[in-house]
Length: 227
Figure 1 (tube, helix red, strand yellow):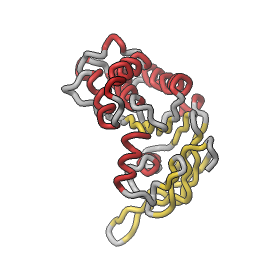
Figure 2 (cartoon, rainbow, N blue to C red):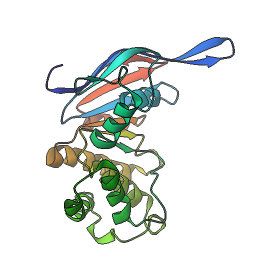
Figure 3 (tube, one colour):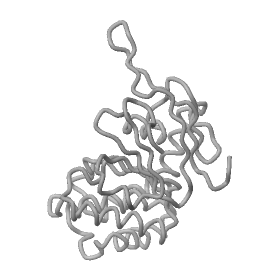
Figure 4 (tube, one colour):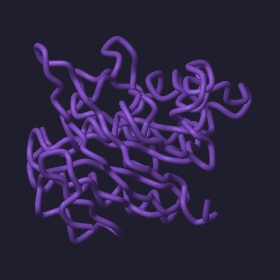
């Protein structure tokens, strides 16, 4: 694989049984993701973009085809190896935020460092650095219910980057936010690419965000219709 590419998908298909037939959510997707770039998977609800992201992020298996992550075939790796790659080399930001409500912002970010095996003596500094990166240095000891929706999403981003993953997958991270806050979140992503050397794959159906992407793949009915 070209050293500038971190992900390569070849002929990805995903089918789900519906009665006696198969519904094909993905119908043969080919794409690449370059390092240190923002790649957007664009499409309406039902286009297949979230299904594709789940496969790229080793959360699901394709029915056919192969995904290479940093030169490793995810489709042919054992579940234990896929789990290790997810924990140490990938970060995830979900539309629902998925923070632990009884943990402070600091504790939510520190938790991912424990899971990934980040050095104990370096955790405090790394958590503080990540929360500062997203503009929440002064809110790190607040619980999620004490934070606005935009602030919660920023905590989720800090959590996703804390263990220095090779790729961050963000599934509709701005869907529940107003336009202004959504643009702030995307600006954070762009800053992380510059400051942390991050690589980000994001799904969205918001046409207003396309201009900030380095690469856009538009999906419809399980196929790439524009790239």
